[in-house]
Every structure is written in structure tokens, then in C-alpha cells.
Amino acid sequence: MSPVKKIQLKVGRFNLKKEKKKHHRKTIACNLELATTVGILYNATQREDCELVKNLIIDLKQLKKEVLALGYVNLKDSSDIFKPHISYTYFDNKNLTKAFIPKSLDVTNFIEKRFSLLIDLNINNDFPLEYIGTLSMATFKVGATGSYRDEEFDLTINIGENKNTKYLVTQIKHYLSMIKP
Image (cartoon, rainbow, N blue to C red):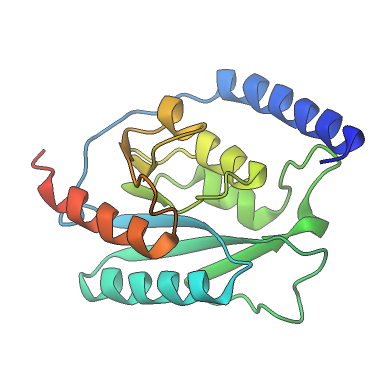
């Protein structure tokens, strides 16, 4: 990462820290059975991850859950590749400030929506997804162990050497089924 990008990221992290002080959410333990609304946050740059999320959404909708997925496409402009859908919204690098903070109506709505459950599939630790996941008003947040999630999330899952989205989705489903609130 270039020195300029490092400074921009540092500014972004400073702004996130400032915004975090303004946000207060109530935590309520939740499993897949009890969740009524589910938010899914993921990196949509790779097609394989998009397919995994699509299948996860299908599974959740079969369980009668309201689902909204927000994907970050790490490209300058993804409007020709990705089209918004009822359950899927996307943002790309043109929706980021100089400090890598995502700015769009879809992002703001996602952050402010009080999901019963937020599933963060961000295994690359992309800062725009960190920003959204940290500020999300979801009542129960789950994701992979490490980085910002250890401090900000209610349930983190150690995926060890299996740093891939497919394994993370499997583990999240497994551990959420074990929760008995």
C-alpha cells in the first residue's frame, strides 16, 4: 500500500472511531430460527463469493427470513457488471471517500436497519466493509475471528487456516444453530 493510501486509511479509521462513539445499539442473542431480518455483508469482487451469498440468501428465504445483502465490489465502477436486485445491493470504489469511507444511500440504509442478525463474510478485512459492520445497528453480529470483529461483534468464529467464504458460511450456520437464547 502506498504511503498516501496509508494516510487516507488512517484518516478513515479516525473517522470511524469518532462515528462509533455516536452509535449505541442493544445486543440481543439470536439464532437462525429466531432471526426475522438478516443482513449479509460481503466482498462481491469474486464471482464464487457472490454465488455463495446467493445460495445463503435462498436458504434464509426458505426459512421465511427477510434478507438484504450488501456487497463491496473492489473496482472503480461496477455498474456494468452488477445490477441491484431486491435482496442484493452493491457499492464500489466510486462510492468511497478519499478516506475509504462508503457513502451511498444503500450503505446508510444498511447501517441504520436494525437487523435481527448481521452476517459479516469479510475475510479480507476490507475497510469499507469494516466501517459498515462496525456501525451497523444490528442487534446480533457474527463474523470470522480477527481484526475489528473481535471488538465489535457478538459472536466471532475462528476459521483457522480455512480462510475462505464457503467454510465461514458453513461454520456460521453451524454455530448459529447451537445458540439457544
